[in-house]
Length: 170
Image 1: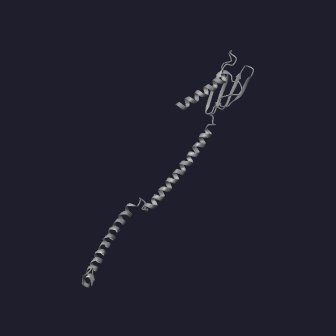
Image 2: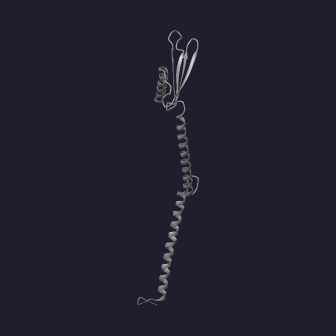
Image 3: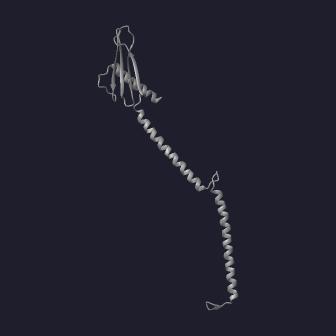
């Protein structure tokens, strides 16, 4: 047979063709063996402790992270709600005793302030005398009252603020 102007016997072409196929087959066999070993190693590495496939483990990890994030968001919403609700709770309480009319009746009169975080609540004042005790309740909104506050009632409000500040800083 003539190739590129050269005459080559058919047996030589057949021999080189077979040799080329054999070398190609050996390369393919070696590549298959290397790939098989690499695949076994990779499978060993890509298994978690429970023997699951690493893809399955990553999916499970992602689900757990998503669940944790949802729990965090729920907790954050509950915290915000509780913070908003706690502003309306009684936080500042102060009481004083005093002698309303002098004399020997002792400090049997009192004034007490009960306020929330925004200084909204009430002041109660019990004025004692020998014949009777009179009680006054005055609403407080944001630290102000529509009614005139006595010195004792103002002192009860100051005491409530002092008690609150002391409780927070200690």
